[in-house]
Image 1 (cartoon, rainbow, N blue to C red):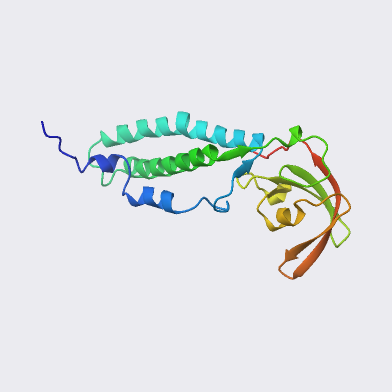
Image 2 (cartoon, rainbow, N blue to C red; image 1 turned 60 degrees about the horizontal axis):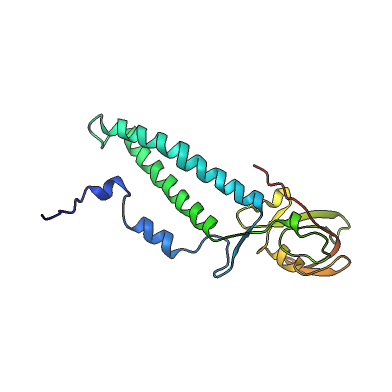
Length: 196
């Protein structure tokens, strides 16, 4: 028995093979090539929650809508079908991204580090900037970074400048206008709360 390959089968999966090629060829954003994907347990859990939401709730509901829309006949002017297929591709792309990120994750719990004066991944650091004002930053994974909340990626210029420094050390941070001196005031390792 001969099996014929249907040209329509691809239409129900994705628009083109270029979608997969783009995922394979492009490195993950913000993560240096060949580096581990460090993240806190809270950051990992946030990605897991998003994956569960997409895979178990949003995707099945969307598939039902697309199936219903496809049963209505002409798909060329069927907004529910066209939008649904587009949204399904976006969800599937995000699911692939999340799975890859989580598969390569190196989860580091800062609360388990204990007493340590040196700055590494997961440290919550208080620094005194040149203007005399103290700022608190937590060094987190690239997927957890939120500078407005004081969460800086471990690959950011600020985190790289602080790495391996100790309380009392002065580090130099390159900024657009030149270089700024930061004095390390405190280093603690504790649970880092990521904003939702």
